Image (spheres, helix red, strand yellow):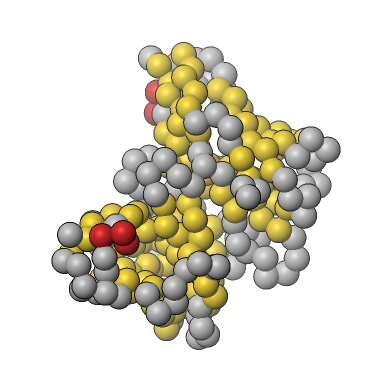
Length: 117
Length: 114
């Protein structure tokens, strides 16, 4: 299957700082990427849909000024958690849709564990 | 309101036997269903999918069955192997052009006992 790289895999930061997470599609051009958040023993919750060259579409309840998404190229989307607080600590996962594959298969990155102190 | 439900949080199966993971959905507009496998601290890996126009799709040891009238799908793994131990997520998507979003269930943790 297609390869999606996510970096960093783990980050610890102080409260009030900003953290940037990168998601790259390595062997295909992804016009659409997705950002999820997963709480322990919970499902993957879609935060936003990132479309190359346009603004991201945020799900209800997700603060767009808190979670900044940029999809500046066909292979890179970034999620910036601004002014992070302990309640933002979570597992963040990105995925990308390969336009050349079957319609709705998304390929996932390995995830980023964010711990805010 | 959860549109995709996996009511069994965990399942234990003996190596070599069949594993059956179940998933129910409430939205009749879903037209494509996927199963993902996830190891701890890793992203989900795509396993197998099925379109709503089919009732069965098979890929090696993995078979997905879809019962549209019951809004139920299941993943069968046979024979089960210790390496299959992971969390399995059921996901569904709506029809129509541009409908690429997936709705996930909470997952079922499968443990295959050697």
